Amino acid sequence: MTRIAVYPGSFDPVTNGHLDIIERAAQLFDHLIVAVSVNPGKKPLFSFDERVELLTEVLEPYKNVSVDRFRGLTVNYAKEKGAQAIIRGLRAISDFENEFQMALTNKKLKNEVETVFMMSQSQWLFLSSSTVKEVASFGGCVSDFVPPIVERKLLEKHSNL
Image (cartoon, rainbow, N blue to C red; front, side, top):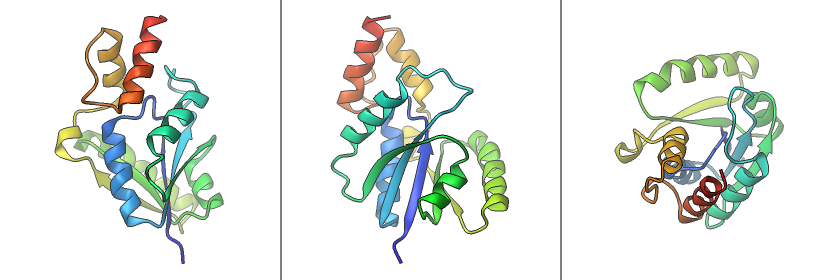
């Protein structure tokens, strides 16, 4: 049986913290789908298409990783794709409460889909897409936080604002 997992997120933008989780999850599963979602509660800097394009480019070296997009419940999307697991990255204990509640809800909706929590490595515990966007918006250097293509796109976005 092929082991498939979905790693959902808004990825606005993808960070080195995301890449850490992707790289490690790709080692655990035969196929990892990095799924860009629409979050109605957030106003993204990058469009849906831009986020998919950036991820596709950044993840090209990972042969068992694909990029997709979806709307709606993650657990329904995971089931539709034949995934056995949903990957969730945790940075700090403050992430856990919300993620735990979501995992229990997903388990109730689709019992056959597991949630796999992966702790960020220590160098990425502080890192979030929001932090990266804020630093970049004030002209700060984000080269240690994101892949080079993402840094270039952030600079382009902020030079046009």
